[in-house]
Amino acid sequence: MALPATFVINAPGDVARAAELRRVKALATLVLAATLALFVVAKVLLPLHPVFGFVAAFAEAATIGGLADWYAVVALFRRPLGLPIPHTAIIQSNQHRIADKLGEFIEQHFLEAGPVEAKLRQIDFGSFIADWLRDRKRSADLARFVLRLLPEAVSATENSGLMTFIVRRITTQLLSIDLAPLAAGTLRAFVAEGRHQGLLDDLLRAIHQSLTQPETMALIRGKIRDELPTLLKLYRTDKFLVNKIVASATSFFEEVRNDPNHAFRGEFDRMLLTFVDRLGNDPAYADRIDGLKRDLLARPELGDLARNIWSNARSFIERSAAGETQVLQHHLARMFAEAGEALAGDIELRGEINQGLVTVFRSFIADQKSGVSSFISDQVKAWDMGQLLQLIEINIGRDLQYIRFNGSLIGGLAGLALYTAEFLLRWL
Image 1 (cartoon, rainbow, N blue to C red):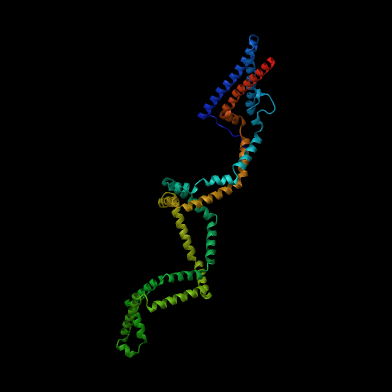
Image 2 (cartoon, one colour; image 1 turned 60 degrees about the vertical axis):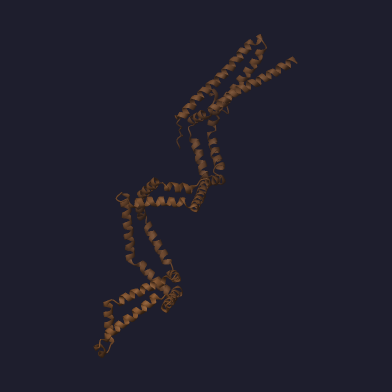
């Protein structure tokens, strides 16, 4: 069972209001006593002059009005004179009903979807987030906070088996990717942009450099020498042929590199496009690529590489959290600050953030509003009514005491008017 809520009444404003309430109460009581005394004096002096009848009528009605309003004010908070009079101590007697009605009222009139959404749309969440992140100190504090949580998050990820699940999901997704159409589309775009011509130039340059290497020329010469008749070997024909081959190849490579419209470039285009078409449409190519993909993903070296990367990342995070290095913290702080700057300059993104948060908060409030109603009701039921009544009386009791002044005045005037009417009727 919840303990009664307590209210501390010691703020300077509360103390001042309590003193003012006591002063007004005393004044209202003094007015009541004065009207009663005036009534008694007027009744005693009535035989001396008829005017005291009017004074007595005013004082009598003022006293009755003051007493009635005193009773009404006191009955709100407690039992007048401690007597068990029905329908008094209204707030105390109806605490549970007031609590339920207050919770119901707030649920129906404050937490409805329309007013809630209208209020949420007045808040620029995106600008608030942007301004918060752009503050360098806040970004640095956020970076330190995130960095303190990272080691625990990493440890929890490992211990919970989440990493195994993530690896399996990634592997499954990679295996489900059809690489042949993807590779074909990439190569087709590569050819359409003409970037393959630069690749051809680099390839020809690499072949030319390889051919002119002494080791390569010696190797070609040896192959040619093995195929030549003995007679031609005596005239060193192999060397002549190697030089001719290299010279012809060099000349050909230079022609292709210097002529953007060379016929060989067209043949190279057709060769690549034919390969791209077969890659995208030939099942045999697709099967080979798929097999290569499966073999690559099944290699233990890939798993070892992933584990090493994860281990190094974890070690770096732990060292950063321990303060051994400030690199990650500075990077996170700069990233948050840059995100705030980018968000501040992106009106569309801020609008999307605002719309998203409005939707989230509206749905959350709609789902939880009955719980809020119950929470408010339970809290009011758990309040210490003695302290609560004291708090209410301090804040609104001064205005309620003026009802007593008004009651005395209005009652007195009404009594005077009735007595005057009665007096006139007697003389008619």
